[in-house]
Length: 135
Image 1 (tube, helix red, strand yellow):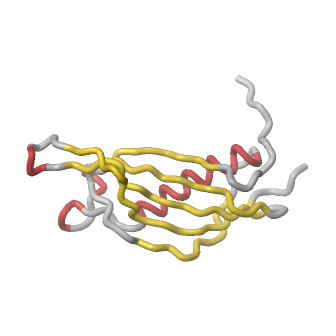
Image 2 (tube, one colour; image 1 turned 30 degrees about the vertical axis):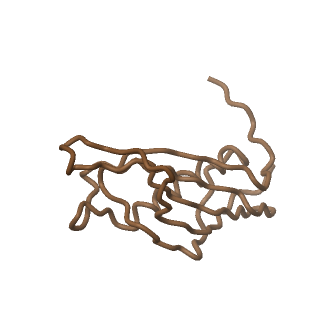
Image 3 (cartoon, rainbow, N blue to C red; image 1 turned 135 degrees about the vertical axis):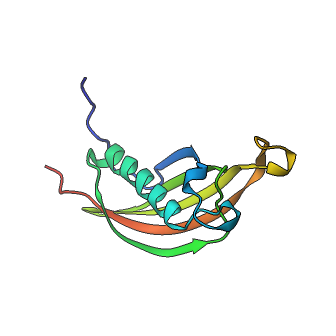
C-alpha cells in the first residue's frame, strides 16, 4: 500500500469525526461523561489534521480557552470538528468543537433516540500542535 504525500497546511482546512458515546464511558450520575472525553476527541481530529497537512501525527503543545457549554452523555452521537486557523513553520493552531447531533431518549424506551436540529454545542477550545520540520 502506498500513500500520497501530505498537502500544504492551508488555513480553513477542516477535519470532522463522528462517534457514538458508549455507556461504558459514563462517569457521573445521569450518564454524563467527563470533560476529558471531549479533549481526547480533539486530539483525534488534530492528529488527522496533521497527517493530512504534514504527513505526521504531530504532538499537542497546548489547549487554551476550553469551554464546556453543555453535557455530553452516554448514548449521544457527537461530531468533533477541528479547523486550522494558523499555520506557522512547525506549529498548527486549530479551533475545536464538539456537537451533540443525536441523543438517547430513554423515556421513550431503552433504545429511543432523536436527531438534534440544531445540534448542541457541548465543548469548544483552541489548541496548538507542533509537527517536525519539513525535509
